[in-house]
Amino acid sequence: MKRILLLGYGDIAQRVARLMVRRNWQAVGACRHPDDKEVVEGVELVTADATNEQDLRELLREPFDAVLVTMTPDGRDKEAYHKGYVIPCRHLQQVLKDVAEPPRVFYVSSTGVYGQRDGEWVDENSPTEPDRDTGKMLLQAEQAIAGCNAPTTILRCTGIYGPGRDRLREMIRNRDATITPAWSNRIHADDVAGFIVYLLTQMDEPDALYLVTDDEPAQMETVYSYIARQEGIEPAELPRSDEVGPRGSKRCSNKRLRATGYELIYPTFRSGFKV
Image 1 (cartoon, rainbow, N blue to C red):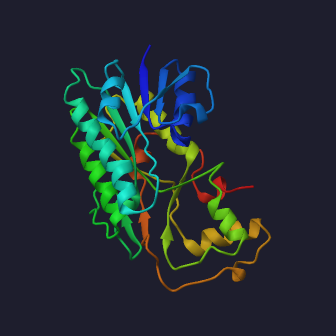
Image 2: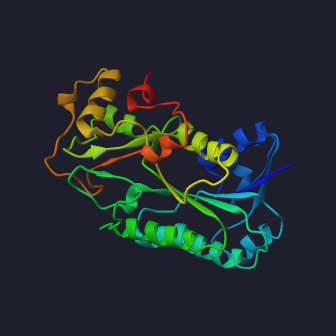
């Protein structure tokens, strides 16, 4: 039986675990507080702190076919991102040096590594020049993963949405979501998990990097207006700004993802946000 280690056991990892168990893989979920997680038949939960190198060494004494890394920082500043992303990835890089038959590593990253602000199209070959400190930390974490003594695949996800991720809808209900001229990009959580499972089970040699996003980049006004009308709110009631905002403005291409043959469950925000 093939085995996957889920390093970090949040929403995406749990979705992947359920799907892999159905495919007769053994899944081990490692996180700091496993008692807080839902018990899923076929998933073994263990206590581990990815910021502690020794914990990673203990985990990887056992053989695994794949490791999925999905980290969550404790805050939104540079220090939290360094501790939550960079340190665990550097520890993993060190630990894998001593693993004779290292597993393939899948790392869930973010398009926050890009700094484009003028609505440019962005793909896997576009320059990564983030101007935010958090983006710089994300890029350092990616570099540590890419330097591992193992085959690696980095998944740069756009804004992940889906059940349990209702912040945008709540902001619109409260008239706190500001419409800007920016282009935005997103991917449903089911498709993040689905694509990871597809790579694990259908692709012998996945590429080293994928941009994980849906088929339709959309301007902020288009998305916010669509959700607002679902909530019975006129878009004119939402605040507006002429500034792009700190997240920049870019249109993310999923051509490489599509070339794998993966079929998106929610190809556009309209299908994903449908009530």
